[in-house]
Amino acid sequence: MSPPSESRETVQAVETAFDILDEIRSQNNVTLSDLADDLSLAKSTVHRHLRTLNDRHYITHKEGEFELSFELLALGEAARRKHETYALAEEKVEELARKTGERAQFVVEEDGIGFCVFRATGEHAVETEPQVGSRMPLHATASGKSILAFLPTHRIKELLDESLPVETTNTITDRDTLRKELDSVREQGYAVNHCEHIEGLTAFGAPVRRSDGGVIGAISISGPERRFEDTDVEEEVRSRLLGTTNELELNITHSQ
Image (cartoon, rainbow, N blue to C red; front, side, top):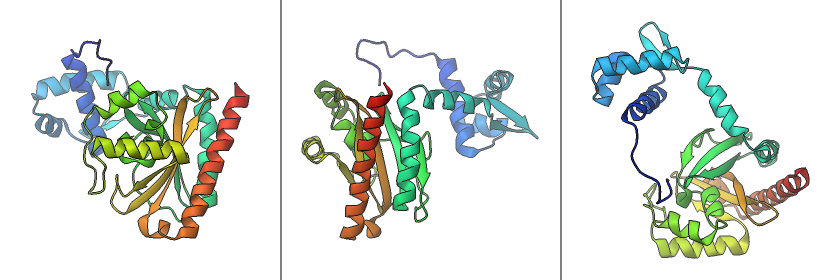
């Protein structure tokens, strides 16, 4: 989300190039004709963009179909490693997944959107989103709510003034209800997602904060709703989560 003072004007050619990349990503591989049809663009326009992206090595061309190139991997890895503190989170995410047997992830917020930076799966984990690089709504996820709760007051207001889309029947879209939940998150130090993002999936998330109180990101653990209904399982997961985020915060403090 751009600051209010910035112009919303965009460059159409750049928009088109990213639309093409997104379409190729969603289909894994696609022909020029399919791209033109799916995006309602002239073949000549799509062809020029494909040729440019191919010349820059962001896509590859095999037997009439286009695929994303590994050149994009370098960009993504550079983004993921842009802060040293993010690298410290990777080890903790893997450790948490191993000890709980569930899926763990480290999420950061940029422009009001949650991004999965690291992800690890334990022996009992279910394979669902988010994948590394996935976007996720802050208001509907445990990691997102734990980040939201510890942002500066003006940013919380700004983000809650945005649309709160419905992800499942359990998604909280009432702003007053969400504010009360964020108050609870601040009091208890963690957030819970009761099937609010993905049907049947429960998650616990806790913020990772700097020594000055600012939030860096969040670590969350997720698993099937029925498995987390067991009080003993829930307590163990929550305890390990809070212990892990505390250790990570200490590591970050001593690394600076």
